[in-house]
Length: 485
Image (cartoon, rainbow, N blue to C red; front, top):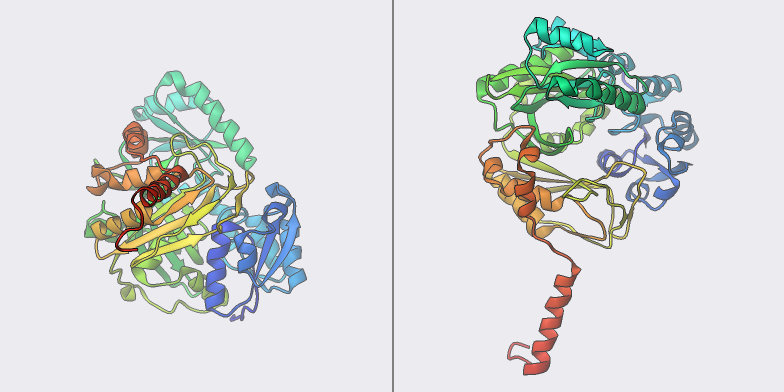
């Protein structure tokens, strides 16, 4: 059934909120922002056509307060809600509450979100769809079960303990030996309980030289399921991505076709609708890939897929939510560029500790093949209550080296941020590293090269500019006006 959307409430803040609002502007659909007390002057508030205050700083009192978000939608007369990513985006109860309130939920069905949010159930469905999965065991509550599995299946260390209800790298602990097993299980269960309210964990064989490949899917209610090709998301810190690229430099054409159509098969099996991503772990040594999880939302890195395909994925989500069929078929998707994305987090690049405060200077890169997705303005404050991501920087080129060269220009000369620490120096060191340029890396790249990467940092601060001005003034004072003046 077709339903026209006339006003959208964006249940998020920062980068994801602004991203959704840009498409709303393109589609001439009014957008509504929600904001917490410290976000009253935030970028997404001014980007929207309307804004409603929903609570104080703690997320549970504002962005995670489902009743207040839905009440805000009713107050402003919104008829649809987009959750962005993070916060309530993958909460099936919230999705159902939105629909029960008579609003259009711009995302997959709540039942699919619930099923895919359980890593154990998701893995079972993947097996049913004949999708390769990593060897492992489910619902682990003591180390005896893990030891028995290791012995019977002849598994070698390392292994990975994961929160069954988790995501975003939380509740994941790598175990290198039997001596670490008891502490690691306790840690994983504790993190899972704190982050997701569920301490159920599973254990899997750890792929030593793994690479992280994900496939972007869009699907409508008419059983049209189309992949928009893959992204490589291998460069991570603490199990969270910081650099992504599309396509993947790891895959040849045969593997690319196999992994993409495997993702399509799985999404059709589970009855997926809207935009979503199937994540795989690729073993570079054996050239085999294994199912990891399904992300039932818009992914942070969707922008690089948009760059190589020319599509607006948020706009496609709106059409699907309105009951329209996909406007394209699989043979019409022809990526013709290479794209890179780096995530700018407000963190110390040497140890990843959070960096909060006011952005006193923000100089943005420009020029051909540069795209920015920004959640802040110069003068804004990065608060301590939320995720540290405040900007996505994307570049494109005719091939991978072109995209890297543009990223080097954008990160190295075009971007200046003062007032807070960011991981900009680390990102620049990575894209200049010979092994990254050669495409030779795994999920352990940062872990293995951290000291080397830090040694490549070029320390810069505002004193440099002061010294330049001082030198210029001194020269004029000593030598008098020059001929060119």
